[in-house]
Image (cartoon, rainbow, N blue to C red; front, top):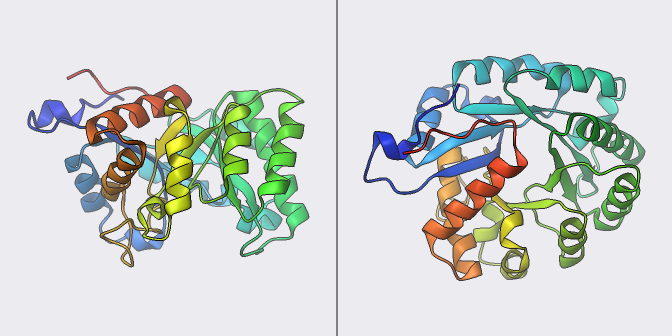
Length: 277
């Protein structure tokens, strides 16, 4: 179901943005989800993607996307939980991904900062999700933290078996992973971390990523951007991250909003575009 762009509802609103990664099924939002979605719409968001972290709890996501026409979801297992869902097959992921509002695979990846799951399990889970993304053509949402070398190695190995669409979500790694990802055809998504005072290197990386590979996200309820840092994050705050991304690249807000939104619809091709204003 397509919704009119917010510009049609409010002619004074000239932006259109997307939160490509949030977690609306988390308990942090349970008491006021309607209000959170409405605030996002009022801020100019016309699409939100709530990201799966446990396939065995996918029913929670299904209820949310059924309730909000402009909210879509992914299917996947977060690396923190990789060891708990190693029994999930490629075929099961593919079957769930056939749902009308399931538009991506993941998030899956490697997290060596917290190391909540054995690294071997994380790698196995990542490769399973890659296979599902390759088979379905849906973008793989990649989580990578403190694992640049192993992530590059796995992605290069898997790309050699056949290309698949993907993005490096909530990017906080170094230049090498960004450059390797772009070289393999991946997109790079930036969160509120980009706005933090000590994120100069990250802003330099964001300035160097090709304009047609950039996305923005919140990863809400985590990582609220300035000036909201330290509070619960929510999709409407993606506006703050987009502004800083534009500043880092030397372009105005309207330009970065248009670029990141167009990139989103190109990558998340299963998501219907809003009606033209």
